[in-house]
Image (cartoon, rainbow over all chains, first blue to last red; front, side):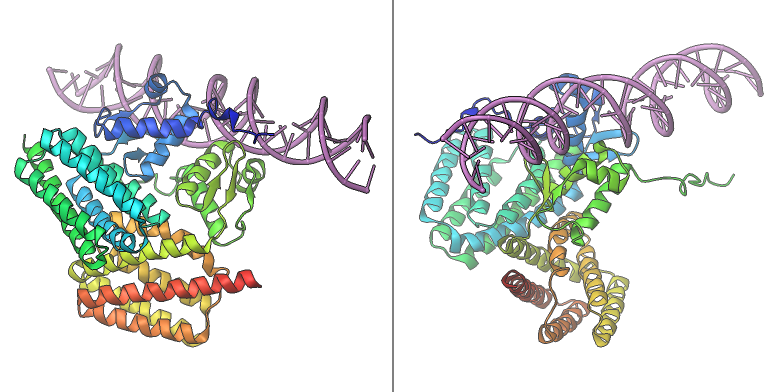
Length: 227
Length: 227
DNA sequence: CTAGGGTATTTTGCATGCAAAATACAATCT
DNA sequence: AGATTGTATTTTGCATGCAAAATACCCTAG
């Protein structure tokens, strides 16, 4: 007898509240719900096609991710993008990612590293084409893979949670050609250190890379707000 | 005219779902809801005196803190204490706290440091009396104060979230007299480095301290499970 | 006595109802 | 006109209702 295949798999819908969390998070990260915008339950239930219960669960959860701010008895708003908070978040992510790099040097399989290398080249392709969106996508993928290669699930989960808040800035900020080129060079060095499994070096490179990102992001926000 | 005092303050109840989160978290951290125990909504609503809606919101939120595991269509259980996960968590907390120490050396006010010193002496008093519970309480307070002294709210929030999961182990594990004495000595060194605002040294001390705690906790769990 | 299957009960997931709080609006007064 | 107070509407927070899934139970067959 063949194994009982998970034949419900096709029909298995993920729980509605989870789906709602993801859709709402996406709306916020992509900026379709602007920072500061009020989250009206009636409007959102209509827009997402769910009832208030899963929606409210989603809103509360996103509040813990810092994407939403809860106003007691007055609902919720999309969290504003505060430069100070972004800076704090990137400092934490820097510590996490540098730990991740250290661990990854010891834990990552050669296959993990090969995959990161592949993503690196895909990213270079995007850079060559000047495709900023594509570049960001692969850039994100590389950082996530690296963090996952640490084999520390708590670390990866924590990193992802913080990351959501920073990603929002992307959709507001471009990147100067100089900074873009510099970031690519930094990634070259990061990949080389990982391939050599040089933990100390990778740790330092990641810390510097995140520092530079912090500067870029803050400057971008500054320009945006000046405009 | 005098300012309109927030006269509703006394009567202002915190939102019910928030209260529920805190109470449920406490039950889990203190071990009154044992690891692996099923969270029956009917039972808990009766026990906590709230309806299912805020309870369910609390359960979902605690799941993101790793205190609860969600079983789709089958409710939720108190997350089991897995040594591997505790180890991962402490590794992350080590990175966070060492960053916190570094930042605190630059950011903490003299008053912050004085308060940490006071807590340190309170902790010494508990150690002298052999009051383990009191010791843990002050120990926790010191670590939290240190993290808060970093002036990085995201860091503090992330740390607190991870901390909940580790605290549960406390209620299962004692501490050998040798390890206890050693921990106190480590705290002496930590305090000295903070007072001297020696960031590099504090960073290293905190990392080592967390490493030692990791070893202690894992050994305690091992003993527990062997028993 | 054990294994299997079918039904009853429980439990969960989501939707909706209801009361209190907040907001918007309008009429009145200065 | 502007401010202000009282009222209507909206919106939120929590409680409850309903259907589907899961679990427990019992009965039967081997």
